[in-house]
Image 1 (cartoon, one colour):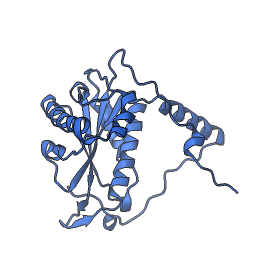
Image 2 (cartoon, rainbow, N blue to C red; image 1 turned 135 degrees about the vertical axis):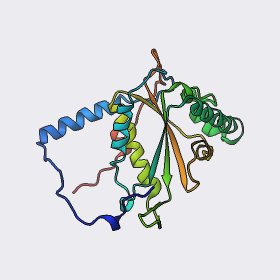
Image 3 (cartoon, rainbow, N blue to C red; image 1 turned 90 degrees about the vertical axis):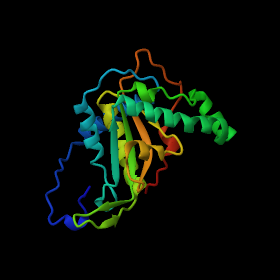
Image 4 (tube, rainbow, N blue to C red; image 1 turned 180 degrees about the vertical axis):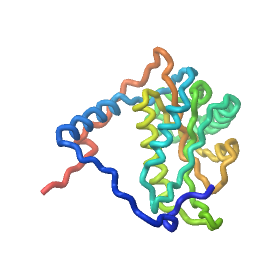
Length: 229
């Protein structure tokens, strides 16, 4: 698929920027922080239907992310088909079993233990939507030329972060799933080998009575350093 590249940008437009009062800025920042602090990774999903319009709006928000040279080096594969979800689950559980039984060092297993994870991934079938994020190594311009992308993983990861925030803002639960290796996703979803699968975003409503691990996030001063005059 041909994408817009810097060479195709011939003009500029006025920045659509509205300055806010300091009070409104603080209120928005505090409200958004409170919203995101309530976000938790969910592993028990309901099969309840979710509006496709909501998902599309969240994906569109993800597509607004900044990217190296504006190449937008990402592809999101949206899956609701039951047979495809079942196939993804089956392939993922093979890799997960290998990880938990053979590949993972003990310190990694110890770190995962409080979360209660294992190789069984029923959410890959139960949730109404899976969104597989692919990072694209190059794009094709309108003349059929291959153009290298820049900061591919960084750009796709920023877009994925926006997607997770948008889904949470819309009232949906999410889970990031990263079986390793993930090349089976290229095969199942018929994506080219030049695309690297980064993760599977599982989304939908949480199952009624869903529970999550009792864990804490780092305090601000534990992950931020300040360098002031």
